[in-house]
Length: 381
Image (cartoon, rainbow, N blue to C red):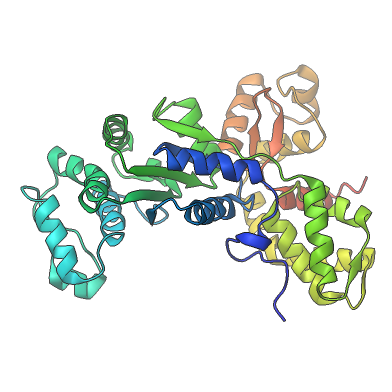
């Protein structure tokens, strides 16, 4: 029997929990043709929110098509441009003849070509005939808007793992500035949706460097109401003839800080283990299973930290907020306030910790935080 708790893919409809206002707000932005940056920590529900918003847009009668590209494996400017153009073209064409016609019509007088051999060998729609210049860059960035206009169809283009643009050889600055220019002077009919789970890297792009300033709307997800998650959990277990106490559900929500990916994975394990009542021992066994899955990743993270970074993380775990005081520097062996700054920046770069608007520290992964506390530092209180 299928589990009522889905964790391995995006969910919509009855499996989508809470965030009704977030869904409506995102729908409104996309319907109006706005460009949006939606990023948060891993397993916080970004993909499901996007899919629920798209589902709601369709049921409301809004006509659109969706394209998606991932920057996960992209390390060059030309590869980024080719993938961007291909993602847009695939929204409006589905055969080699149609691909070739679009390239010939909308990328005429550029160095982009449709190479049938490259398509047959690598499924590539855009190949370079010669070295790519500024005009070729502009032509591809403008392509989604031109396609939307050409076919009279709204286009939503999702760029996932967008923080990887900063890993492009030669730097991201030229690409971002050209993207800014075209998005600022955009035509109608196309929305770019920038997403990613590298929270600090995405925040550096959109909040700190202020790339795409007043061009892209920063969308902040709200926490899921604990009561809604409790209702979702009770109904899920009840569908299989199982019962769980609300107080236990509250503890689960607190442990995972409302992250639906972790919670649903955890509840799915509980559902497989429990016979009737979902008791506290069942929850503890399920937690051990979940930790066993993720522990190699957590160990690798800690092995990648310097001694000073480990000590700084311990100070965060112990509840400290001011790390440059003489007391904290002495107690945790951080050497100096200058070293504190370097260590802090390194942990942010490694996506281990972040700081809120009030400069309060937080560990980005709630399960990692639990594991570090209980198993690395062996703090049982």
